[in-house]
Length: 170
Length: 318
Image (cartoon, rainbow over the protein chains, first blue to last red):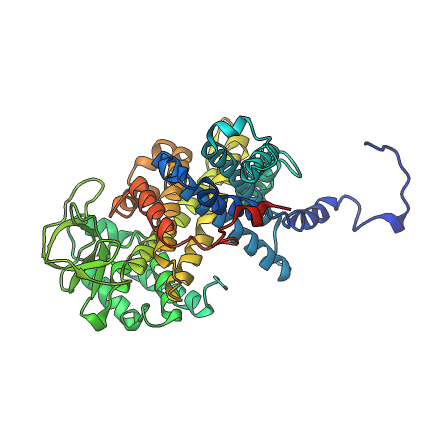
């Protein structure tokens, strides 16, 4: 929705006129860090060997190594989230910190989804039986993760924010 | 879990940085490559900072101080086995410890005058009995092949010896990234600064995000090893995996942004990139590190929010 030519009284102006970017920056740093995408990744990755039982050992070792790497990346996303929260509590957070977290976390979401979808093999295109809880959870996670780099601030916007902090306004 | 380094670590790192600069900074590796025995002066300088009094295996704070010192050494590609020395166990007669491949023991910066040991990256260590002359190759100029005695149990010595070299690498990556950032701001092409091209901005953003993620993991690994967590070996391997992965990204970005200039020894990036190679290749590269990490995770669960999850129904059911 775009509104143009709207009269605003002085009482309704936040900060100074033409000083909106600073306010947006401050607000963005506090936005959306709370969605712990990495938590679901962590849970599903940990459940995989349990849910797949004997099939686990028969999976290609390359796929199990990808699972190991995904666990490392998930831990990295979690630690970045902790860092942002610590900075927020110290009121020292910069939008670049949240942006870096989001760039990592949203891509971890997709990486984990892809690893798990390969692990459930043929069930990746047939996750409908209500009793197959793990398969359904992976399917749900994969579909949700498709939008992780799009929703609530696309990854391109996060890159712009982080680059501006690194290199200044060009 | 507080993974931030103690304030003493910053003080020591600053003092160490000044001392390295007084000795010549990045000129030290240039001299070492041409055959100068710079290790004695570096040894003396580090001794004057009381670095050899640190006991990273005994005190948590010392472990953090050791990590911070390795990070500073990395900034200058310091031609001294700082990580290996601080991984030693003087109480067991081990002055310096390096993890090696059991197939071919090759040690980076294997300077004389120390009681060197090697670790297999798991449960065994062996005393070094002979050190060959440095390879003098392009990518391993100061690395040496070593011979060693029989393997004996060396429980829990490996994790620290895996983590500290990643902190040297961290210092190299931070410096390479800072130099690249400066280059983008200074260098103009087609009438604009390189920093104004969005393709390059995005690449820098992705690289910075990955570097930050590795930095956090490196802190975590120090905490895990210093507090002897049950999964410390897996945590150390995870740190090494992320270190290699991040080094690939940072140096690829640094070289691409520097253009032809980055391959010339007039730029520090060229030296950092070349001297990062032994740390990234020894004792093992990415795939072997990943295979070992997987084995480790299948033995001791990788600590996370849901470690020990053993029932799908109770976890996913309503």
